[in-house]
Length: 445
Image 1: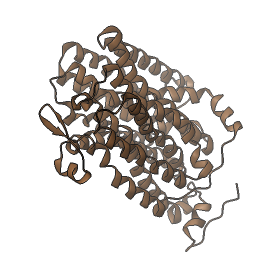
Image 2 (image 1 turned 180 degrees about the vertical axis):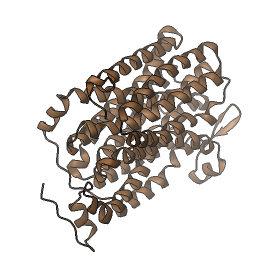
Image 3 (image 1 turned 60 degrees about the vertical axis):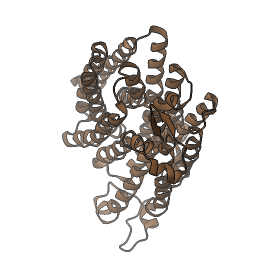
Image 4 (image 1 turned 90 degrees about the vertical axis):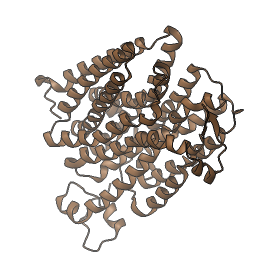
């Protein structure tokens, strides 16, 4: 890469971006801070909308059979899991796209694509002859939204000095994660709105005597997506990033910390995304008497809101390790207690433990991402590992619903699923302790 120069007062935005040096205090205060914050705001909004689209299907799935479709429990859990599978897999590719074609360019393209499944799904749910295969294709396309997390997180951190990366990544990822809460909160109102249905020309389904406008949950994202696309053209930039090569990949995959950090983040974000994707269907099976849709947003809201706090707290005490370790211990406890709530058929207790699970996930996800740039000092490697870790962890949104569906169909109850999840959590705590917590590890990051 070319040698960086200090821009002069009055320099153009393109000249400033071409000489980006956030760890230079003079550059940061004079030129970098404002541009970095603009990119962070637009990136965060775009990522939030991506999460809204990614979990769009989860808000509709529980209503589908009541609207006249006829899918089995395993089929519904599979459809709920498929966006997670596609999103996680694409994250491996999306991680590298900002460096290859520009962060602004890729964010625009990957957001524009989401209009396709949003519009198509709106029409599909109004036609009860829509086949299971068609919904498989649709939910796979919805999964494209899940890939955006890796490209966004791998890119946005490059705008900020090392001392602020934890906070910036926490804001981008945390507010982005809030998209799950936003879709869970808004979807019931949208699906119950005859006025909105009239605007979109939606034909309602009659579910338990009520008119439900399922398509509204999809169509309502068209305008926000178009607006954020317009804002990207004005307030985002393409940073001149070093392009990845096979040597970089060897460095990543040959480092033990890549795999240790991947496990830590998979445990926390995997639990967050997996529970968020499956919780509506789980409550429908275990507590069918509870009108869960109106409070489904609470857990994801808490987790998304606490992710920036986790990153900030890790920066504040200069240790992502401590925040992550304590949060993972909390996740072990709450996972076990959720199963107890199911066994007691006590929904208030079950829901409280579910929310505490999201609390633990929120702190852990923010703190773990703060650890990455401190373990890997090289900005390119840190960026690539951030994307890779996020890609692997996203499989939680696929695996958890599939485990639930398999366990129900095989054992007739959910307890074996929670036993598997708890065992995984315990292994992760042990890995965190061995690599980062114990004094002889000498890794206070």
